[in-house]
Length: 329
Image 1 (tube, rainbow, N blue to C red):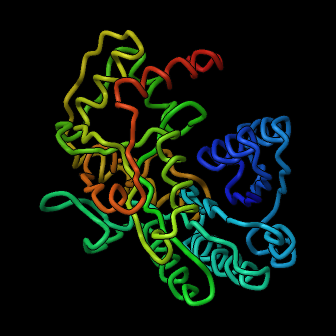
Image 2 (cartoon, rainbow, N blue to C red; image 1 turned 120 degrees about the horizontal axis):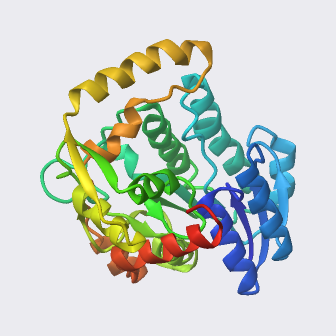
């Protein structure tokens, strides 16, 4: 297949593009290069034979060029962690950028589009496991704009074969988002905010890529929305303990209340965000300690044949091994 991966210098996008190239597919990766990590991923992809285009979803002429001749488009680019930027930035990238890309796809001959969304559109689980029909309650600008982007994708469903994937917390070799958590746990003392009883359902990056590929190649996926997560539901305290085990660290947890951290995050946001400066602490960082994510994978299993294979204890060992090999730990 000839594929385009947007967000190609991000964690998931770079892993998807590199693997597709290794398996013999023709790959174009569209991404940004604002950090040393993104620059390193660009070099890795180019060494693997991937054509990397550094550009913006606002560049409609460039989008028309990179989608031409593609059989499938994996749309993983998003504004996500830019906590110092105004809400308009998230709308421009996540909503209007998605619209620009889909319009370019229509003009290019309607390739299959797999749109990467987020479990953040739910806000948090309430009663029992969430599924694709559960109500959405996004509670930050990232989740709000990703839900709006889903609506844009559905509006193109009569012109393009589209599939929406709500991606769970993803980890594994190549990830830099959880590196701070691994480093903190490696020190041996961990601040457990809020008791550590909320639940996660993390997905190992290779399992997620399997699911994304199934979404692009399974006829029954067209027009559908799927949640892709791991097979295990892991409370935060157990999550931290398993990482400590993978690191070989003897861990001591210090239990702390949520309220002071929530108020401090709010104060930092109100002080720094109007100045265009990333706050040292913000409320989205508390999601790890307070939000509950528990999903049913029944739809993905029945329609896609999706079956995540990597247990969390195994995945954390692989991730720790990669961090050490890179000299990060």
